[in-house]
Amino acid sequence: MELVADKQKTALEMLSSALVCGEVEIVDLTHTLDPDFPVIVLPPEFGQCARFRMEEISAYDHRGPAWKWNTFTCSEHTGTHFDAPSHWVSGKDLPNNTVDSIPSENFIGPVVVIDCSDGAAADADFELTPAMIENWEAEHGRIPEGCWVFMRTDWGKRKGAAYLNMQDDGPHSPGPTPDAIKLLIEHRNIRGFGTETVGTDAGQGMHYTPPYPAHYYLHGAGKYGLQCMANLDLLPATGAMILCAPLKIKNGTGSPLRVLALVPKGEQ
Ligand code: MN
Image (cartoon, rainbow, N blue to C red; front, side, top):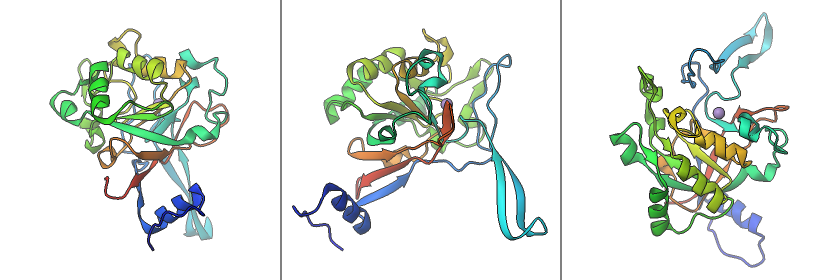
């Protein structure tokens, strides 16, 4: 089947055709939920994030002869997951700040990808700065309003202890500076910010002013976060779209989810 521009077709019919004929491909940006996948570790005086756990209810046996099913438990912020504005104190009083109340049109939209993988390979504390964003825009054009911005670091390829990269003084992983996040929110009006690391902030993000600036500014402005994503190296810098609907948890501050990208063929 060939994709033919047709004035008789609606935009949605065009998209359907593009998906069927492979002109638009789907890239899965999600890690598998697994007890071994690392979760964020906070200083010991704070409550901790639960890992994913799964318990078998039955498996075609005396507990249920014709069926298999499991019970799973985890934090709202385990694995590849969505952060709602209510996750942070700065967003606690905003309207529609929980996963069940966010208007669902926010779960589908365009994304741009800023490639920080070389910098992150050379320096675990690599920072995304306003200058890097402006350099990216000089090459790819201005970041459109309402767009998701993903920080590619290839951190999603790390395994085991290298993922959190815990040192004596805490975790070390790349992230944005306060000024970079403020630029994206105040001057580009982005919809959300996504990373491959365990949070939208750098591992050492507690040392910025304010601490954890991506969480503080994004959620204070009613914007969203995505973290622990995979395969950002398969996305083009511009031109992709994502689907990222969290579970509809009553008053939920976040949720594990499947993040899918729609990518024009040949741009992976
Ligand atoms: Mn989170």
